[in-house]
Length: 140
Image (cartoon, rainbow, N blue to C red; front, side, top):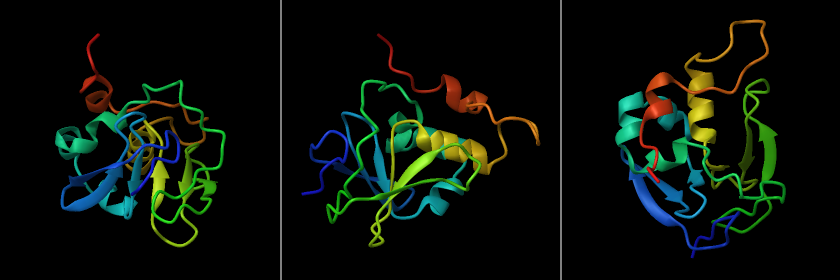
């Protein structure tokens, strides 16, 4: 059984454009084998995918400080900043099972890769594309 490194509950297996992804229904973190494939998707494809809920960082109660254990092999994952200047800390399995993205990090990396954000030379602001910003939020 694959357990969420944050909530320690069983992860659901979802499919995003043919790629298998593990997702936590409680904290909305995801384990990806290939981040590059997700970056090739259009915003519409991301919004329409089962990973839509993970695009918004709407779980501030989740403690991100402990070292995450890989959901597959349960070994401690290595934390690093994606692409050194993105400002997004991700956790990678040292044995190659993939990377863990906490809630909202997929959208931040997507924006970074696609050039959304601050002007060159400016301090990068945390923001998401207009399309992702208003889509799929849960109503209370």
